[in-house]
Length: 246
Image 1 (cartoon, rainbow, N blue to C red):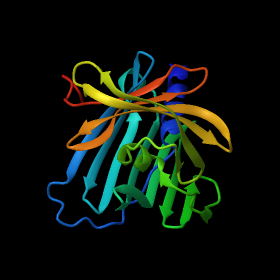
Image 2: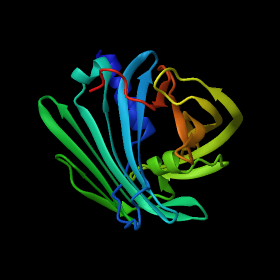
Image 3: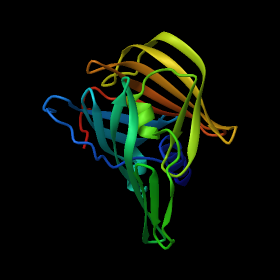
Image 4: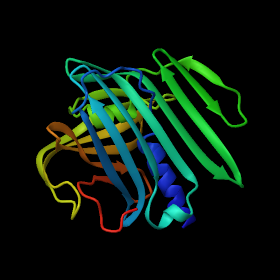
């Protein structure tokens, strides 16, 4: 179970490492909200839950959410992340303006908290028992905005987790794939975009995004994270509550 815990934290931090504080005001937004829930698995084991609430207009967006343990590992995992993100749209593409991510974990009976705050060009990091850091914000969008709100299959995208820079480098596309994820999960036809996650010119992992239609917009319906030497991590978009779900 300790191995499963380590894989879960690695999977989530690899996918996200992330997220953001929304500052944009969304006007006339009574009908622009939606909630997306993704169940995360490492191999056959359900280990995580990503829940995101979105507010989207033609000009701006906000999101907030939580990522935490689920399934058998939930009882042993003392790790939790919460996030918000906000920005505008330019030529229908999102542009991050603010970003916040907080993770807390209990280690040796002590709670440790890390916060990453992006406000325009400045990033600030506060962490338990460490000095605060402040530095220029890395280029591109935050990872959650790039994954959840920018469904285009580009040759390359600059992204960051507030602290580190990444490049999503497209290496393959497979249009109109038939996606069957089982009961209670999104099923239909989606385009598969396959990326290498590059850091300083080196490939760190691979990211697969299946892009389909959700609430009248293109969005990821399945997210795959491939990390060397461990089973693939997969997040599937839920469309209905499971019986007995807490």
